[in-house]
Length: 254
Image (cartoon, rainbow, N blue to C red; front, side, top):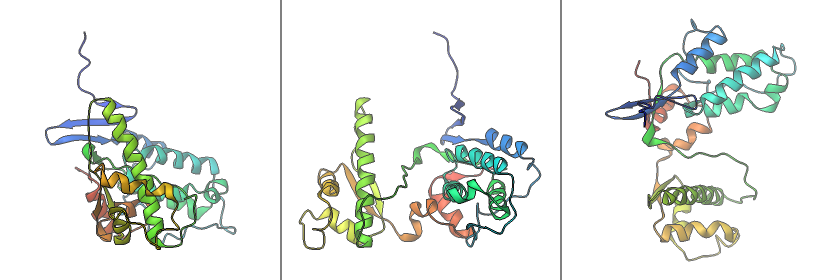
């Protein structure tokens, strides 16, 4: 049997295996993007998008080449595989009103996004992979607690699927942490007694309580400032952005 050597590329991802861990990155792909759009000499930006980005339908703005715009968005979408820190910004720029008839405001936002720290060789620590999903809930929540509870139950269902896949390979993992910044959600999950404040929540969401009781998952309180989910849903100033990027396990060796 021939020895294929150490894995260095996988589905477009570069893999760096070092003594302190396995790192995933797309340095070559980033360089190709910058070359394709003639941005090699561009200066980098501190964050992918300004806090007050002002992205909105601009009916009176100057139109730009829609094919160029969609091409840049498509390139950045593939980059989110190793750069979760630009997820929110790419999704914001790829909204329907932006891609159908982009204007100067939208193209400048994408240029800033492309310039933001992309010239460096950002690496993502392999043992800190985060499960993330954003979707519109099928139910109408009447409180923040209910919305957080339903989201936690949805995340729990993903964990159950992943745990089952790992068991098929002989790996038994339990006590998977789910980070929550809502005390009421944690109280409902850890207290199997139903009361008037939870009777309006659909029964199918309560399976998370059973998973917690069996120690398949563990709800962990996280301070709002350290909530990694915010990185995928909001734009931040540089200090808060860098703090969350560091927590998620990304670093730039250059």
